[in-house]
Length: 148
Image (cartoon, rainbow, N blue to C red; front, top):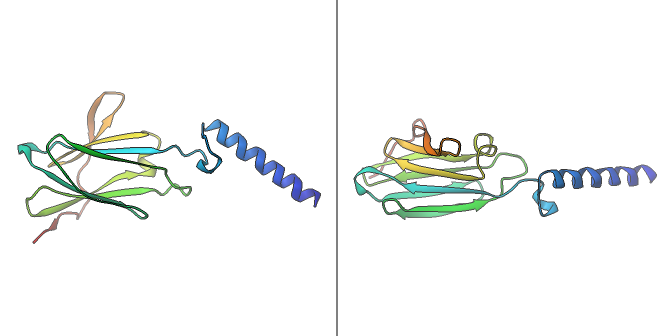
C-alpha cells in the first residue's frame, strides 16, 4: 500500500512539473497548445478555391474561398503526436489536388499559427523568420484526381 501511495505521489509530481514547464493551463492539455491553420486563396486568374479539409477525427466541410480570402481552424494535437489534417482542393479545372496541410511531426515545432497560401503549383508555408511564404510544396504524389 505504501508503494502505491509513493508511485501515485511521484506521478502527480511529474505531471505537475510537465504541465508547468509547457505552460499548459489545464491538466488535460498535457502540454499540447492549440494549433491554428489558415488556408488562403492566392490562385492566379481570380479563381475561386474549393477546399475540403479533414483529419481522422474531424471533417471541416467544403469551403469556397474567393480570391485572397481564407478560412482557419484551431485544434489541439493528440496525445500520440499523430495529428494530421489533409485537404482536397480544386478550382474548376476538372482535377482535385490533395495536400497534407498539417502533419504533427513536420509542423508542431515550427508553428502554432500555420499560415498557408494556395497557388496552382501547390501550397506555400509562411516562414516567420523570413516573413515570407517561401516554403512551397508540391501536391501530394498521385493526388491529381479527375473530376467528372
